[in-house]
Length: 103
Length: 314
Image (tube, rainbow over all chains, first blue to last red):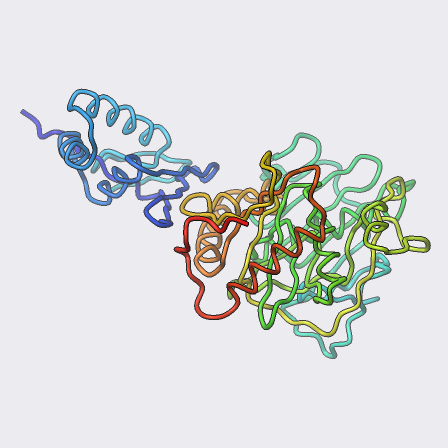
């Protein structure tokens, strides 16, 4: 059985914090993203590699949400992070705008 | 060749730029020199430029190319060199307009300034910047500040340097004739901004000014509420205000965008950032200027605080 994947902020993502909210620019450098509330909370968690279970446990302990909803919403959010290359799977090699990245 | 000074730059220009202050610095500091040449450019942009607006704007890491049909093609490089390829029949005022607007904005941006679309006036040893969409009344409110005796630092384009200081621009305000009328300014004999518009370059007197730290930022917004109200921007909104009112943000490509994010972030940390919500039809420039000056008076001394009371209702 393989270890569950862990997610982490993408190396090429640049983010700044303003009073608990975050603005970031992905490696494509074409668009800004802003995170507040739960999104900001998850983004803070992703400073270190986390599994989906880690993230859900953290969110459920902090916000009034049931496990199933939390898991679904967190997965959707992670998909979006990976799509925008703000986040990545730990250790994954990825070609991004011609630059090889590695964790 | 005539030499002009604005935004801390020394423009050596083959194109006459009437209305701009001539430089008196001798010799000029070499890093600040910008040359403006009149010559023909290749018919098509270099292949490595990114087309930002089809047929009009192309941007590379240190290059901008702008084409204005019937006026000119311009190329700006390295924050130091501007080439103007003017269309023979073009009106010289139109050629100058884009040179001193978008092209100068590109020069400043290539020099890694955060270029804001707004106006700046001196307050004590710092400055207040007024931002707003086109037509929001930035220049009119600034003209009101000038009428009350404040020094205008910059109109329309406010470059902020790495020390978070706004640089002094041209000693003039662009005003529509009705706005000038309301402020009691006689526009007869003044130069029009564009030949076909009733918008005028209004010269304003001021003493010598250097770069001044930005301490206050006010954003003019229209509101449905009956009374003018000020509201401190917080969190993401603080970044959003600066992003939205960045001058010609289409010029920011690639690493320039990362730099922009960082500069906006450091600037928002040092300023009081306030949205000025104005009822659209009843608000006068005088009332807006007064509300802003009152707010400045209340937050004039001491360290800049980001975490104010939730609202300052007026």
